[in-house]
Amino acid sequence: MQIVLRVAAAASVLLLTAGACPASAAPAASAALAAASAPAASASSFGFAPPPSPATSTAALRAAPPKGPVFQHRTLPVTRAALGRTYRPGCPVPPQRLRLLRMSHWGFDGKVHTGEMVVHERVAKDVLYVFWKAFGAKFPIRKMRPLSAYQGSDQASMADDNTSAFNCRQVVGNPGRLSQHSYGDAIDINTVENPYVDRTGRIHPPAGARHLDRWRNTKGMIRSGDVITRAFRAIGWEWGGRWSNPDYQHFSRNGR
Image (cartoon, rainbow, N blue to C red; front, side):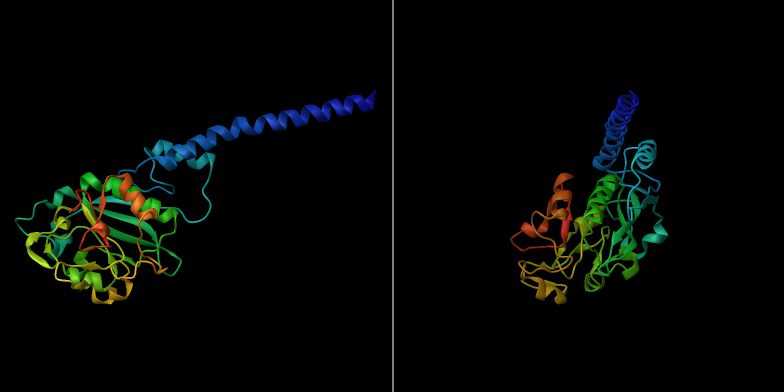
């Protein structure tokens, strides 16, 4: 009799334990999945993927604390003084419509760094989504600094393998045309590993010539169908790597 009771009790414990797992794990997984699939966050900083709201982020963190480094970001206003030579009177976007994105990224050294980028306010959330996806895939970014750090010189920024966005300037290799970067909705990534070939055949930056072979397995190189091109495609941006004069580093909201 005692043996039967003990077996029955043990079976009850097993049933309760087995039943408890799905009931508690399913909401946790759903909350984490919802936060991870959200496009992006607005202002503030989160220790998780960009969530739709701070409340959702808190719930997801409590349910499934992330392991390892997490994507941190902040969206900040931009002053005219901070833009330096990247802005001048007559530029198509005023400083008050721009935002400074401060966010985590993986470096070529395998460590997490904090970079900065200036973009138009209307694309800030979408850009955070792209770099959150890049962070999750550990896609390396050499540097991420506003063009003001290079006195507005796109050539200097490209030579330094810098990833950047806003810069009120003319198109490189086509001085009669205003660059899409002037609107804050175009981004260049890892400029040396992803060079630009202008309409005259000149390569920008010159050090990028060795990376024109797009079949090489090079760290930081952008390829069709990779995490970078997929993330930009998800937000509706186009890649200059498909142009007849390829600009492998360049992504823009309107395809220019």
